[in-house]
Length: 145
Image (cartoon, rainbow, N blue to C red):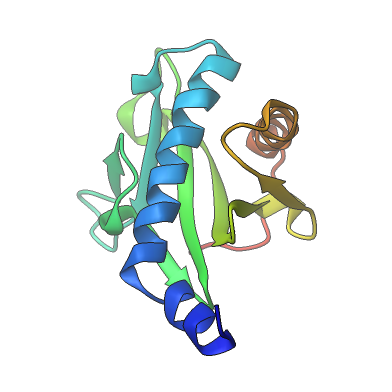
């Protein structure tokens, strides 16, 4: 792949689709890691409307992601029991991109740490989920989209 083709891919719709497909895989496995129902894992995007401050969907798609400089940004939210709807979740912003056959994943509170993961690498996925769990309980966010 030429450098030009790599740029075209990173900013194209195929890359976005592959990132969302991978994010959906990550959400499925995150439910297993947390030992909760998959329905408790959502992707959210902040809205400007006061009445509906968030778009919340169970599947990653174009309506809940933000693209910037070859990365796809998304917020993963864990829906918690017995909470009011407006405050019923813990969230973490992640960004990812596909490079060759692997995905580079960064978590908002661990911005400098890049996780390089594939679907078949259980150890790397476990380390990613540990970092993601820690981001849910850490209040020092690096970016608010």
